[in-house]
Length: 423
Ligand code: ATP
Ligand code: MG
Image 1 (cartoon, rainbow, N blue to C red):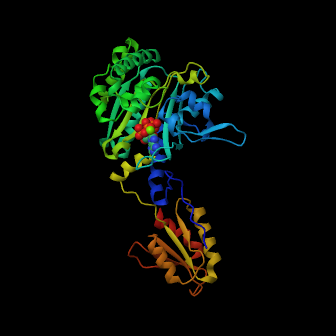
Image 2: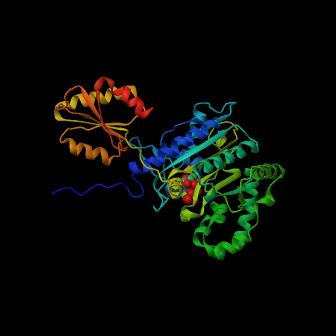
Image 3: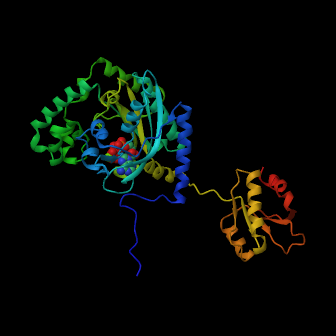
């Protein structure tokens, strides 16, 4: 009796080779793009102390309250699989003095874990690409990030799919004042709130603005606006961003209800949203978090960043671009007696042409079957080693994709022939 099959954990999906083509495309091009803006890569661990996320994201946020994978390790320390990468980046930057009197432009990519209800575009292990820029207080870097994301959508050919939603949360003090005004307003309408919002009222009232409950929308439409609480500097910061977007012809919508789910944001917050991914429409989200470095024990270092979900990005990309796996250029096949020579021929060609994909048929067998395999893989040419050939040091070059007669060449001259074919 066989044991029952072990399957992947719910919400954690395998990414098979067919789809990996898109991943490589996205990852390679993102790296090129952010490098062209001077960003350098940072890799931090997938696991951090639980306290890092409580202190940064906030204890009363959805992520920390409901979505983290938290466990005690064998020493009894409370650890958490990272539910986002900003906190770890800031921790690492403080730990290695990256922020001391320095501007840092950092990017990262990797797995993120959140215990959410799995559905299309929402997984329990998913991947983000993101950037974090430290040490620049003015709106210029916020603008540069938006220009970067806009360039990215254009490069991918999906700019028409995405809308930029923009808001400002002002300074921490202004946000606090707003929190009070908003709480007073919502408390006055307490009975109209749903249970979730009632629960949030004391702990995280701004998140109520984010509620998707249709019955709350008219109440929320009448809520006081954060803009009334903003001082001159905050208004100025926001207005400069809006003006730059207009000048760059980047369409955007100001969304006063965009508050983001994490506690550390201030001033600029933004999301790039698609209408074709249902409730999982946000592909990229970010904002400014000037207080976070200090909050985690570093200096007063202003910062701004964004994170992008790769799965959602690829769902969009697949609507516009068909990508297929690279096909091998060369398939080497041989009779049984020539198996070792076939492997060595493969080595010889890889040394001369490192960019080519060469598959050597392992296990020999019937040449006809081997040829069928090469055809199925859409290899461009087959190289056949067969001791029946008059001169046993010869190799047959067979064109599989072009209507050309096959050629028989000396093994020592194979490289020269391949140069004519592939260069
Ligand atoms: P949502 O509102 O969809 O839950 P979020 O505000 O929780 O998103 P962020 O914390 O801003 O998301 O994360 C940045 C990006 O990571 C999102 O815009 C999205 O593209 C992606 N993302 C977030 N959660 C998931 C998930 N569970 N599965 C796949 N991608 C996700
Ligand atoms: Mg979420």
